[in-house]
Length: 154
Image (cartoon, rainbow, N blue to C red):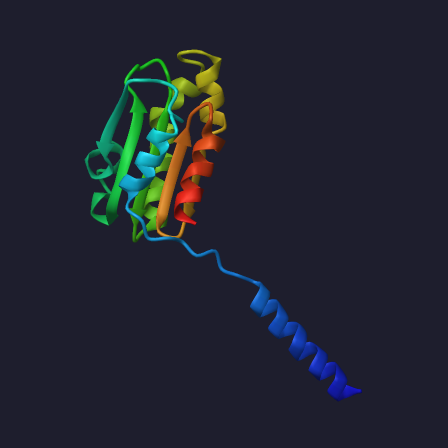
């Protein structure tokens, strides 16, 4: 009976290990992610500002930790449309910089500057990391953009 239980446990363990899969993260250039977002016309507010993440003021203290990245924003300053994608060796440090940006720079939008749509975009914004990619999305269609990013990197 003990041998049967041990055998069953072994088979179950091997089955669980074999069925569990780590989500592999593709190593793709962030420029490919940006192109995919732009090609899908997911950025509804045009024109947009396109800045290298290392040059963006919110990343001043972490720019040495950034391998590559981009910041897309609406050029119309009363409409919120922020999409950041950064590839980094220090995910937590970059996420902290984005949190500070969100707290300090998006406060007026969250208070309703530019309309209720902006307040909703801040409230529903997404800050996540997958592997060594960190992304932040504050738009009215954040879930759609997140789906495109995840499709590219997973």
